[in-house]
Length: 123
Image 1 (cartoon, one colour):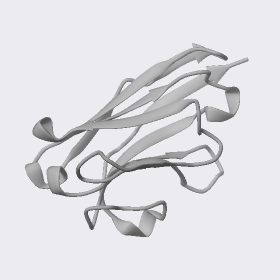
Image 2 (cartoon, one colour; image 1 turned 135 degrees about the horizontal axis):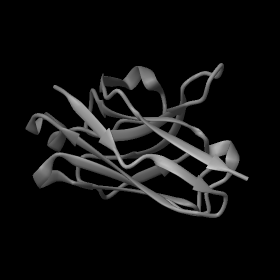
Image 3 (cartoon, one colour; image 1 turned 90 degrees about the horizontal axis):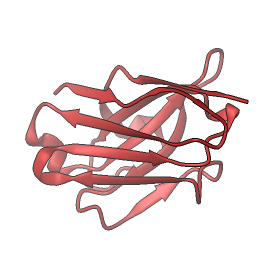
């Protein structure tokens, strides 16, 4: 399974970006999916996750109220709408497919990972 993330870029603080991630197979349609991020010199950090139906979402406290995760099961895609961006949101954002229908916040529950897309927020 291949995952391709896109939509990253450079924005000023307070701006918005929408990330997209496409899976190469329909495997993703029956599994949870999530976004993680990794900044230079830091550990991979959970951002947002969504279950296989799209009915349940979870967020890291640092992005609650600013980011929204959604998915299109028919296309095997997951999205991340990011509003009110802050310099501390700067990182490579990676999408992942869970080993189960629900997923979670731990990276160990995810079996497939994309290469990521860079998000840079300037002050």
